[in-house]
Structure formats: structure tokens, C-alpha cells
Length: 203
Image 1 (cartoon, rainbow, N blue to C red):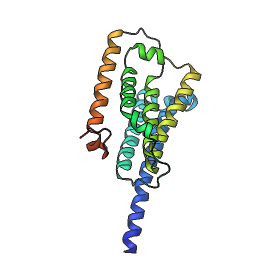
Image 2 (image 1 turned 180 degrees about the vertical axis):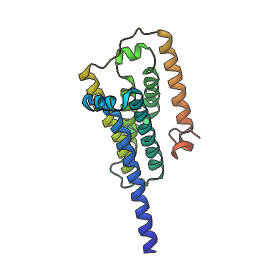
Image 3 (image 1 turned 120 degrees about the vertical axis):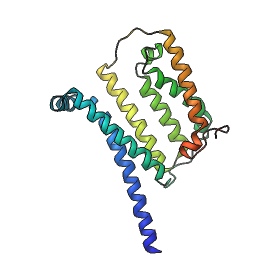
Image 4 (image 1 turned 90 degrees about the vertical axis):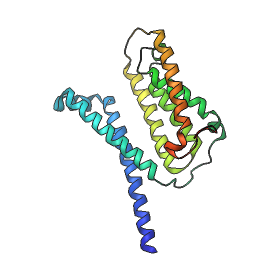
């Protein structure tokens, strides 16, 4: 029995390590563009194609480790009670978040006005999930995403890293409709995808 317990503890530690390594890899590579010196050195040594290939590979590896690690990791210690307000506004916040994510990759008025809609969308998503959970692994995951979004917004703002473009109203409509539809689908299948129902009408 003691050996089984020890093996179980070791397995849980390995899974949590997998989650932490995934977070470090994913956010570490995404913070490289913020560090001009490091980015420049990598571009010189790897070339643009090599740099982009390494960026994509490390990002994908980190994301896989995050998904697998989070799915298998135990909830761990409850750090705080979930905030009822966060749970109540979560469906609406997710729709807004997904719309911002969609608008970030299109020539929208939303993107021109907010400048960093993707990071703002990630921040909203992470904040609501962080406050609506309260367990150790959720706090680690969503806290890391929230910290990344805040740091990247501050860095991008200080560097004035904003691309100029002419917005197209039709793309705002597409962003709103596609973002809202994707958010609804994720909430609908949230229970099957992540093991927890996000809304009462979810599957």
C-alpha cells in the first residue's frame, strides 16, 4: 500500500512538472519578441525561417504539455473559494473574449481602437477562469496566462508595437459573429472537452 501511495505521489509530481514545463516553454518563447536583444541574436543565428520554425515548434510543444498536464493533474489544494460573480458573468465574458481574439487577426475597428485585442481577450478569459476556480492547478494555469497578457500589453505599449491598417467594417461583423459562435460552441461542449460544464445548457 505504501509503495502504491508513493508511486501515486510521484506520478502526480511528474504530471505537475509537465504542466509547469509546458507553461515555461510556451510563455518563455512568447516573451522572446519582447526581448529585442535575444530576438535579434536568434534571428542572426537561425535566420528568419529558422527562428519562426523554432518559435512554432516550442510553442506547440509547450501547448501540448500544458493541455496534457492540466488534464491529468489533480486539482490540488483549494487556495480560495470561487467568486460567484465570476461564475455568473463567465458566459458573457467568454463571448467578449472570443470576439476580441477573432478581431485581433482581422482588419477591424475593434483592433484599431483597442490596439491589443488578443492580449485583452486572453486577460479576460484568464481572469474569469482564475476567479471562478480557486484550485491550485487552475490558479497556476490561468494566473500564468493573466500575467503573460498583462506583461505583454505593457511591453507592447511601451514599444508602441502597433501595426497601422485601414479597418473594414465588414470584418468587424465577421469577427463578432464568428467569435460569438465559437464561444457558444466551446461552452456547449465544455463538459466533454474539459470535464466541467460551463453553462447549464452545456453537454
